[in-house]
Figure 1: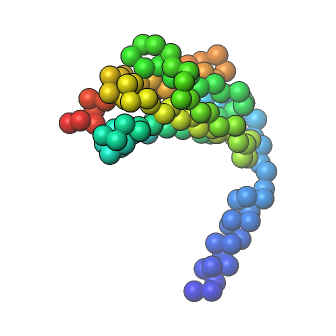
Figure 2: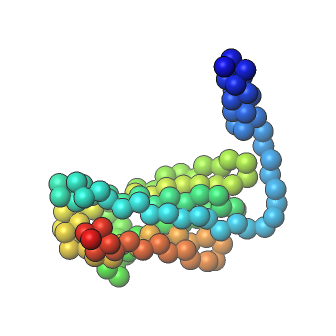
Figure 3: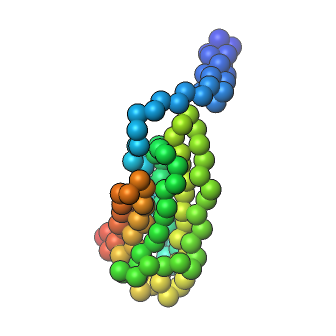
Length: 128
């Protein structure tokens, strides 16, 4: 068993310590939107999480739209993190009770390298 552990730690050292920058031009972010849980919704403290990963160059911007109107309150976007020449960041939209109850369509819109990557979540999707 000891042998396996050694391999794992080697892999971690290499994975975290090496810096391989491949310039293949801009790479669009992979965007995923994690909806609030039904429990959050029922408690009126719902938040949506938008994850961006694997993009290059840096400078991706995130905006949130609820039912067609841009929302600026309750938005918290992290700083960009770089790993092996690729960037990632996350943005959380914390819904007010009002928005959580009335909002139907939530869009996390990512702007990167003059292209938009919107991801949509509809509340009706999780109410089955």
